[in-house]
Image (tube, rainbow, N blue to C red; front, side, top):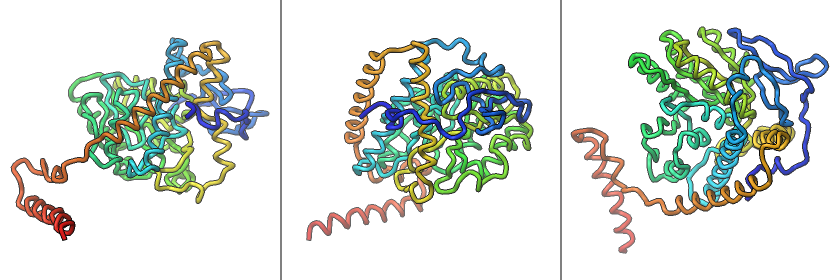
Length: 402
């Protein structure tokens, strides 16, 4: 399996709206944003962009400082992160199709948003993910194989959140934003200078939990960054049917800054998230970052995206592929060579093999473990349910004996 998407192997396409010049406009809360324009007309959403889809570097007066010192080795590291995360994700999808996982939520197309923001965090920051932040987990040092236990049905998480300051995956839509806000308020009371980042999608932005998080974080000036990956589709519902304004502008109503960043530009995501986390650590309160990206695959492996979106949209976004974008920049700047890509291909295949072997070797859980640790001192109802389940399990043995 190749380390890049099929889009990366196709001839270069120019999506509608590509422009030759970059301009700056000032958005909500005084945040300056980069727009791409042609003949003086804006053809793309107003957003921060440091790398064009063609791999050309765009200057930005506000955010350049946050990536000014990045080295060629660090750029190759970002590329490696994205490639290996995509390879892991592809392997997990294949394992689900083979019946090894019950479900999988792919991040295909969202690698730049996750790797850029994940690498912006410090070790003492705390991350609250949804169920799709495989790239952020990679940045936080969580072994990829640990992400698969829940989807195989052998555990309820797979890692100790406090070992990497990376919370367990959250299935309930939007609730992690409340968890992150409460944790951030606690950090303030402790007098620590670390920050919190909460991930959610455009669909979750419509949840009441997220609105409540915005309210509490603003009132208590909590050091939290709300990182919304707007991948254009909340399962089968497009973003324009969820909101009357761009998502980042919602922050204005709560009294804190919002900024939209090109979610397929790893450099821009790195810079904007560093800026937002720095604000949080300096006591300047919350920030909403909207990473404008695209879910290239299905919402989960139980979804069929061909039923609600067309090929034309997907092809336009394939031209903005985040991995291909950084590769073009690396090659144009002579920051890499074919040996690097060959070694990465080998590493990618090794990761795929390790993931396959680890999943198939996962032991089945104790059937009665679900009843443990429900109450510290036991409970009559739990005891009754345990007995009922034991009788149910025993019935299979009785049937087999006849």
